View 1: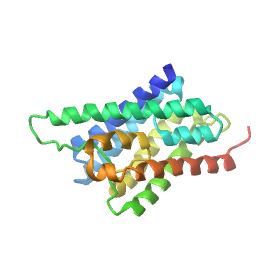
View 2: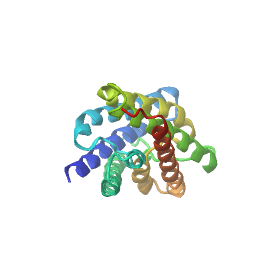
View 3: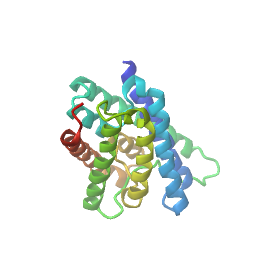
Length: 223
């Protein structure tokens, strides 16, 4: 249970700090808010990679978990349990964030919870989420591979920096999910468009994770 709970904690931190930054900075209102939000998500991943990486591998993302499973890195049971606890962590984080925002006496911060939405339609959003997740999960699989030289010594940093890049590209189009759990939590509290379009942020990242796993299987070094 320790590794499952570690995934819950890690996903909580990612969702709370990443989405919290998006809300506090008013992500999308100007360039600085976008950059700040991207950095927040990346740093949250780096922090958690070096906190729980040795316990659970620090997936904190169902798309990554699916990619690792396809590549034989974890069992079917662990794959399912990781996803369940990741979603629980994200929901708890969104609940905390919603509570903080709702009780903000200054009323400067909006009631948003950092939920995702397709700015240019669901087709556009689906394509963006598939491509960005594919690239992100590919970095994760490569950086953590034990047959890829010494790159896994710096996996947390590589993954965190790549997530910053992913957000810099994707925020304009979808708010950037590349993580079903991170989208499910906030959408449950945001309701409206975020909940109606939630399927995009579940299907897109999972498809992207599968594609990344297939690419890595093809290019992965044998030893």
